[in-house]
Image 1 (cartoon, rainbow, N blue to C red):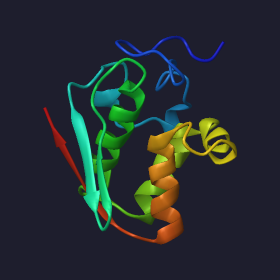
Image 2 (cartoon, rainbow, N blue to C red):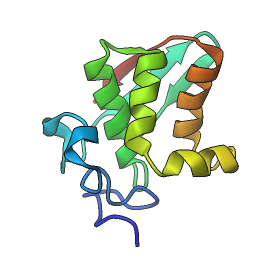
Image 3 (spheres, rainbow, N blue to C red):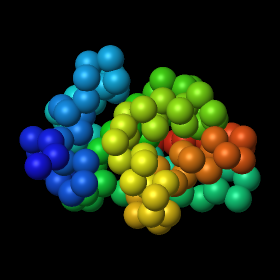
Length: 122
């Protein structure tokens, strides 16, 4: 069984961020709290919104943390950090494209070298 259960979440990343080593966890204010946020990523040919919902709370927290740590810019460094936080699910996303669309977006940012803006709204 993966993880111990993300409050308000569930699904594939159910244990996130509690299952991550402290060095890989996002900022402390996000740990254990399902943020009432909706990160939106926009840029060249990118229009992406992650709405808080069961099974998406880890992605909401990851993208909100990336916005906070990288001045609302999703570039190569931010994408790499996001992939570190997704950890074991990255390989699965590579093996089965479309199975983890929020990871696919980070891989796309790395592959295409584009930058996008992340806005986080309530």
